[in-house]
Image 1 (tube, rainbow, N blue to C red):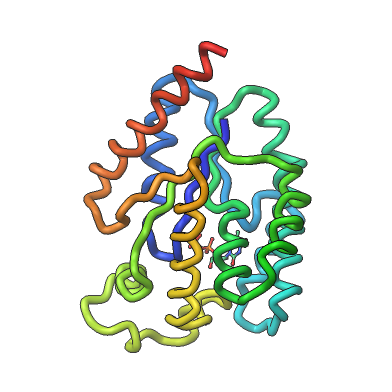
Image 2: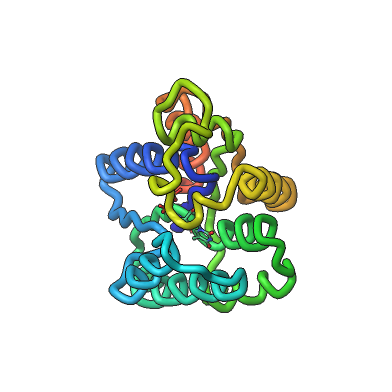
Length: 215
Ligand code: TYD
C-alpha cells in the first residue's frame, strides 16, 4: 500500500507521518517511511542541488531534477518494498511536482503529467492526505514565531522556501485543484489539533486495510 502526504512547507506532514508509522508498526505492519526529494544515494545528491540556496536553477531544470530523484527512489526502493507487501508512507510524491512546478512555477500541466508518470513508473498512491494551511500561517509555524514572517533571516530558508509568499499561494491553489479532481485525496485542515488529525487519518486508512485483506 502506498500512502502519500502533501502540503506546503510547514504544514506539519512529518508529525502525521511519524504518528501513522508508529500506529501501523504497533499493528504489525511492515512500514517504510520515505521523503522526496531524496532517499537513495543519487537522489540525496540531487536533493542537495535542489535545496541549496547557492544554485540558480531554471524551472525546467528543477522539474527534471525532482523527477530524476523520484525515478531513482521509485525503482530502487518503493517498487521493491511494495512487492514485499510493505506499507510505504511517502512524504511528498508527484503531486508536489504538479503543485510546485506546475501551479507554482507555471510549467505546462500536460507535459508535467507525462513526466510525472514516467518518473513514478505509473505508480498511483492508494490515498493522499493533503494538509491545508495558508502560506502565512505555515511560515509562522515553521519558525515558531508569533509575529510577521518578514522578520525571518533570508539565509535560514532553503532555495524552494525562498520563492516568496505569492509562489506559495499558487502552490496552495494548485493543491486545492488536485483535491477537487482526484478521489484519492483527503483534505485536512493543518491547523487542527495534531492528535485529532491523526485519528481522522486513521479513520481513512483502516477501511483500506480491510479492503486489501479481502482481495
Ligand atoms: P523539504 O525540506 O523536504 O520540505 P518539506 O519538509 O516541506 O517537505 O524540501 C522539499 C522542497 O521541495 C519543498 O519546498 C517542496 C519542494 N518540492 C518541489 O518543489 N517539487 C517536488 O516534486 C517535490 C517532491 C518537492
